[in-house]
Image (tube, rainbow, N blue to C red; front, side, top):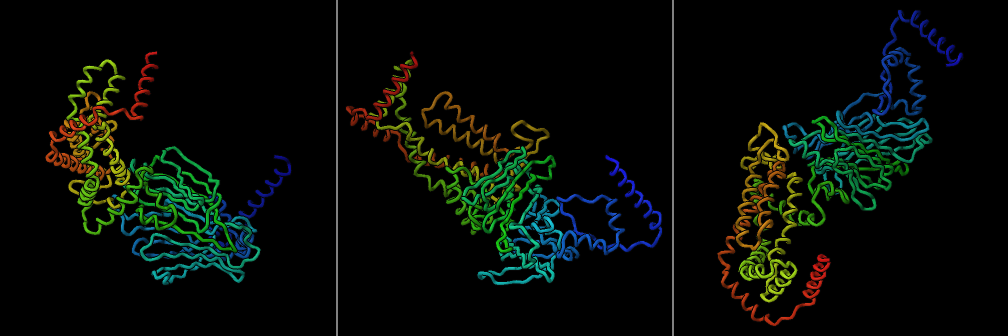
Length: 597
């Protein structure tokens, strides 16, 4: 600090001291109206600064406002009020201070503790808009708006309209919200009317910080399903992943929408054209009441002082999301591409159809199993016949094992020759089962994400969207948990019984035969904390499959299959090897030769 700076500080302190001695005991200056509210990103004044400001005369405060806001200074004076947009699905509360959303209440849904479900809560979530001006960056939360509510018919749908205006003789700032009946989409427009030479920016800046409150019983499962999703204007869906580690990303391309997606709900912002300068982040807090912290900042192009966007606050229902905008249905995970088609084109529509006629979701799950199993029954029949053929030729296979057991290559060659002569394919029993696998795996993605099962009870399960805690353990078993899911146990037992029954129909021996008993136990550990609806589906599916095979066995005569095999043997006694078979044998011989070398 040089001499001039020290002198200045001493003089400043002397002025403050003289002021406090001669004026502190005089009449108190009436408290002035609160100055322009600070946004979260601005530094809050210290208590000493607040006392100094409150002791200044009105004219000086007005001068400060005028210096900071110019012709907009009068817009910073007002009283915060609330305006409401409401339909049969959501209730949206909007503040007249800044015209921002304060709260979004879901009317048809509640938290697992039966409390009101808020998808947006100003205590945990903050949105802010700002625009550049010749006075610097101005936050809309600095201004007070006058609300006007009306109801209109837009495209034949009853729609609530909220118009917020803040203006002077020089111009107006106008924000408009619309909410159609039955919709989860809130449309918003922003307009700068006149104010020539004041606003210099060509974009509206947006900042959204959100602490996702835990709405479901299973926090771990909620965190596995909660992430920031976004969709590029070029048509590509992206996300920040499901890792617990902090994730940040600056998106180089224009973005169509950003979604803060929870397990069963999504809060998102959708561009009228596209968003620019998008920065996204997410992290997992230690607080068990918060699922994740999420942040999005972006800019919205201003064209002739106007900008438009939409919000979505609603459930993760596939068909509902699909109707919002392109790619928005990606907020609900339907599985990998090779199984997602089952959910998107079959299960979703089947579920929706059955909901019209049945109230019990346990009954709906049973009916879905029966319908899918009935549709796949030809494949089940072919699979059984394929295994039956392998079973009746087991004596011939055992002879080859005794004769060529010490020479695996020769054994494989002779087996292929035998299969060709008998007209039997070793994969005839496996291929139909393989074609059924997409349906099996599709359910693994559908049920954990099906909001339809949320808080729906069946038998002893209070909520089919989470595990059924039949027995609560006083300790935690590693990889299993601190509870026993009865549906998962039933699924495991049924799978073991089915495996035992199936082993009687196949020629599998050794490790392959025992693998069928190990897999159900492994899945018992995996699925113990998964939704009860999923375990119940697999249990019912096992029982129906068991019944199908028992029924087929009554109508399939092994003697007739053996007779057919003998006919093929006689017919193919002089059959030449196919080119494919010859190439396969040559490849095996070459592999064996390399192995010996």
